Image 1: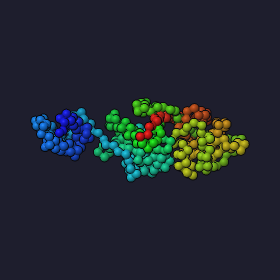
Image 2: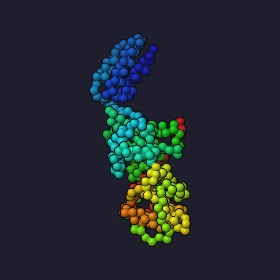
Image 3: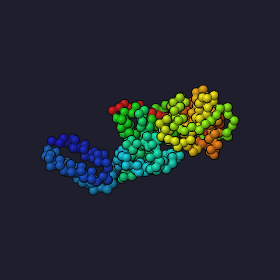
Image 4: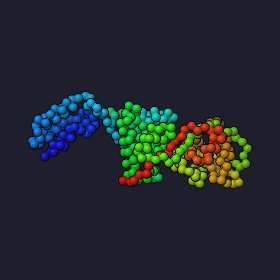
Length: 348
């Protein structure tokens, strides 16, 4: 026998269970369930059941959502063949929140898959009538996961969509046994910081991005030699005393292969620092602990200028690292600050 209270609760909650009034096929399924109960359950008051059935019929015929009810989007993780969908979702839901973000293309997404370990299976989209209204893009390595992008279309904000996306992603990442998930949030975006704090993320450190003119080459006491970028990365751990952001981690830099240019500064036969750049983007600028940071930076940046590059940028230098103040004294300007926020995960 079907409990009366359960039947009443099922009817009152039918919009939430069926995804909204416009999901006609699902509403018809609910209506069929009520008819089945009517046939099998003679103990339920016929007048009350008939009233429920009339309301259900009107709901199926209705073309709009019940008063006060908002249609809820569907959510799904992406597959390897969903690259176009991910590209559409990033352009429609994320770029408006980051003015510096260039338009996403399939080629750029594949590049990020190579460089930053972004995987479609760890990307999730929210869809309304097959159109993306929310997206989260993430990368994962053995030491953790990184939220590359999260965003919703303005018309769909404040409905809990972004929260659903992040929580579903964290559940999946926990099952994959990643120890933590991190995200880099612009420090001047108070709503974004509060959003992740509400999800129990904690601010761990601050990064500062720099942009400026390259200094002219000057006389140096040491020597600068071109070195392939993969060979320079052999010194990465020794020259980085503070944790770098995901894009400047050794594994990310290794993904560029031999494409970037690399220079090493030697003094008295000892490596004092190196610079890796791709065009006018400095991918890594690292100093030995005993080196004069400003002197070695000026020498390497000046050598980069001899390649015909006048201005350059370096993203997300850890606050407290001597490199940041040295760049400022050399004429570089801080352009944006980021908070590194993270949350430790318990594997499922």
